Amino acid sequence: MNATIEHVRVSQQARDQLLTLKRRTGVQHWNVLCRWALCRSLAEPAPPPNVKLVLDSNVEMSWRTFSGDLGDVLLGLVKLRCHEDGLGTDDETVVQQFRLHLHRGIGYLVGDPSVGDIAGLARVAIGD
Image (cartoon, rainbow, N blue to C red; front, side, top):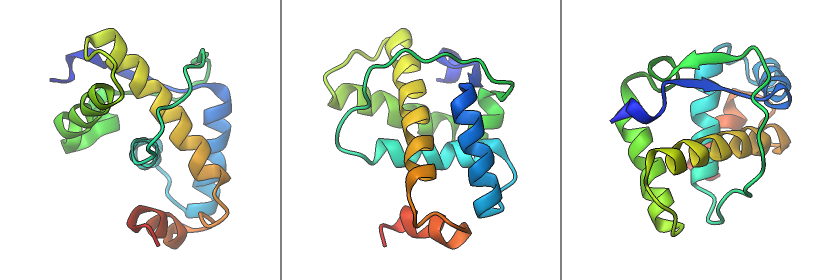
């Protein structure tokens, strides 16, 4: 099921935001923060804006590293979201929406004043 996304790469701006999140939360792994970010964006009712992303940073990981044991689940959630947003579920659309959700989620997490430490990150997850 993960044949559509082989590598995950982020923009330079997203890399800088992830560095900020690493400092604030103490979470040292890009993939963990990126999973939080993806889920944060998927929880938002509105679709992400269709912006052109420049994936120009040195933060790159394989899909397996990004997703861990949750690869099929995360890809399924992105596909479901594409369907709910009235988009196609073809590979190109799913990959594009994955990238848009990932980047929006990173922005949401870094911009959320309650995410000042790991406890704040956890509170975002449980909706507190």
